[in-house]
Image 1 (cartoon, rainbow, N blue to C red):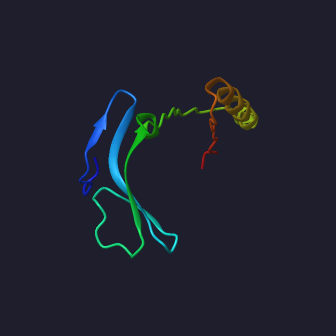
Image 2 (image 1 turned 135 degrees about the vertical axis):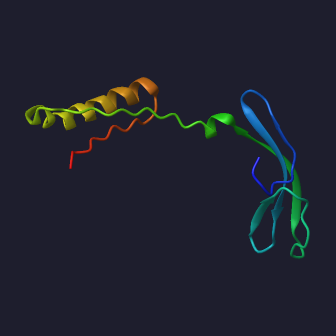
Image 3 (image 1 turned 180 degrees about the vertical axis):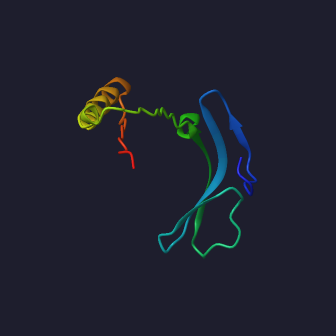
Length: 105
């Protein structure tokens, strides 16, 4: 829970559940708040809502490694291998996987 949020938060194994208020203003504006609406423009409409956010949103898997190549001739081909690795890993995981190569300074 972030500081300043005063609403109730429930959760289960897969999701977080929040309660809040969705306000629509006559000028086309919209606002989501934890607290009931206070001073709103005339003609505004408010809805009490519950929304869920999957816990997976907060999971950022990261795999990193450092590979040192001592022979400069082999290092020239490493960029092509990195592209192939990126494509293969993306296919396996079903998501974009970036493999970057940083040349030594």
